[in-house]
Image 1 (cartoon, rainbow, N blue to C red):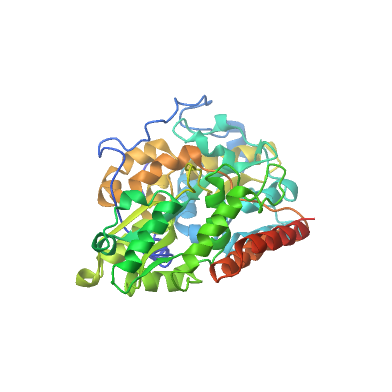
Image 2: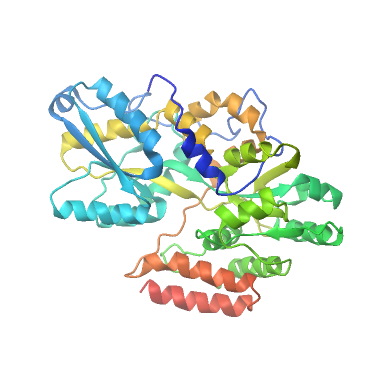
Amino acid sequence: MRKRRALPMAVALGMILLASCSGGGSGHPAGDLRPTARPATAGVDDVAGATASPACAAQVRQLRVAAVSTLDGVMKAAKADLEKAHPGLTVDITQTAPDYTTLVQRISADRLTGRSVDVAVAGFDQLPAYANQLGAQQLSPRLLRASYDQRLLGLGTVGGRLVGIPQQVASLALVYNLDVLQRAGVDPATLTTTDGVIAAADKIRASGQNVQPIDLPTGQLFGQWILNTLASSQGTPIQDAAGRPALTTPAARAAAAFLAKVGTYGPQSDNPAQQGLLRFGVRRQTAMTVVSVASLAGSLTFIAGQGAKGFRAGAVPFPTLPGGSQHPVAVGNALTVLATDRCQREMATELIVSLLSPDVVAASTEASSYLPVDTEAINRLGSFYDMYPQLKPFLALSGSLVKAPAWGGARGGEVASALTGQVVRIVRGEDPDRTLTAAQAQAAELTR
């Protein structure tokens, strides 16, 4: 794509509802935002990414794209660019699905009526359905731009096959009210581990500020996400390599013990988009909370808009268990090719390359602060990261992200919600070890 496009403000404002936060320091100088460990340019067929052959470009007259409603601006930008490059081509975009699960159902239903889809956006946890039920085509990293961050491609694999190219990627962040922490004598640098967070919470509770030290909302499947991110920091996520639940490992038990302790500081919110936002960012009733990195920039704007009622805030990657390291669980979406005809596949691939152009990735990041999937886009975002320096530490996470669970079995789609329910029981005071044992049995039954 040639021209920089800004995504609709509605997208950015919608992200504010996820949580409230803002920022701390940077691990990168303002002039160079690239993580220092970035690998050399990967081998690709064309530095600018794949384009369809002239013969296929002349043959294909229509591409059908299926996406969720929140990607409206991104999809329209790619549509305009591809139709300009190929006069006579029509890119038909369907974006009526409210979520990724519904999108899978609608694509399946359309197939029964003979309506095929060439390109679809898949939530990471839905990729097995695209691979096994919808025939997602295997993709080659060589088709991508040289600037695409290929360290992220593992998030788009199913059974060792690359079937989705990650487009929007998010991890968890711990955000804090810096004013409250300083009055309690807490150094934000100590918040990198769960032990540091608990020590900070104890100081805040003892400081007489009448603020709940920590609130970890569990709704919107944050419960499973938090539990898994903590367990993953010690190298054993809650799903093992064979796809089975792994909820009684030492790491999972340590994560549950931390969540049980968090629950003793006060009631934990359910919905991070409503209760978490109100309690932390509006009412200032809590000192620390958890958000998706995708909401950081919008939430910072929200806090700044409070004027004198605002406060200084900071953000760090979600803490690890003691002795652990940053291996955050990623959520987000990937671009898949469902077309089986050779020429339709070539044009579908060119559309994906357009959707992943540095201009579009940069504009999407400015709208909702996902982790940029393109290294050139990061360099173009210098002024954005100067405005929101609290986002810079998250750029170093791309190489250590791990896949979120994709639960199999006839009722695998129920596991995430069920596990979140078990996390709620833990933070409300039920015995963490017994609850995890019950969660293991429940998950095993649902994935049979």
